[in-house]
Image (tube, each protein chain N blue to C red):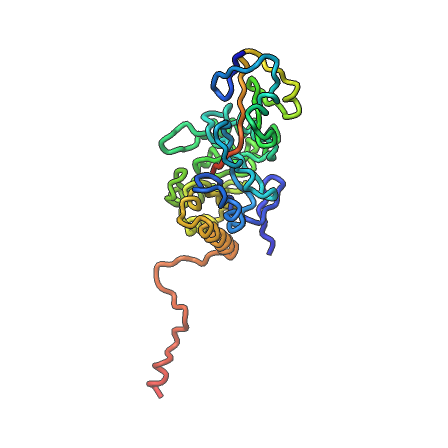
Length: 66
Length: 260
């Protein structure tokens, strides 16, 4: 199925969770923040959040800035 | 003498805030924090680049340093609020530097949108430090909106041009009850010193250190200049006059010999 990840279309398997997606990208859950369909989702809820067709997911992290 | 800066309910010893952008190598950040003595440091929030394997900037910032995430990238109040909530959800505290910019040439902040965002976020329990043009009416509105400080620019971001807005910043210092933190434009330690002599509560700078040939040494130089300026402000500057006032006694030393 198709989702939008950081503004780009991406094909993922059916029935995967946010946590599956994060881990498939080799990301450290402690260093990122996730917005799921414009709602912030806490790390504890990633494993219970099943992705659906056309979901929009933003994965963000801190970078250098002034 | 006790001279502490209080922002929200946090007591700070250091009046130099620094940024983490534009370093040729983020590995120098711990040394820069150490030499600057900064206790507050800004970071930005961005989309993850899944191909980028570089170290997370947070890994270079000691845990005892307070993070001040900015809302850079926000073009209106709603975007700033969204970024602020995400930054807080990332688990790095409730301080936020509001930065709402829709002008890409001068990167000047949008006062109206900044006030709106400040009002919303202060009600949500954020400690809000808004980046503004040094405009007295905007600053007064921010006091009413619940800001914890105001951060007027000395010159456009990243220009190293110094305190071009000096007169207007002085008005904010004189009229606004919140800490006035000069943010943006400071290029030299003498600029920071001057801001502190004027009564600014603190200085926030990034480019001046990051673009120096030796950023670590420059961080140390700024640490001294901010302290010097603060002490000068507390000491009270002497009066300025047009004509000379002799520093040594003018009684006739040589005359008295001739007259013997």
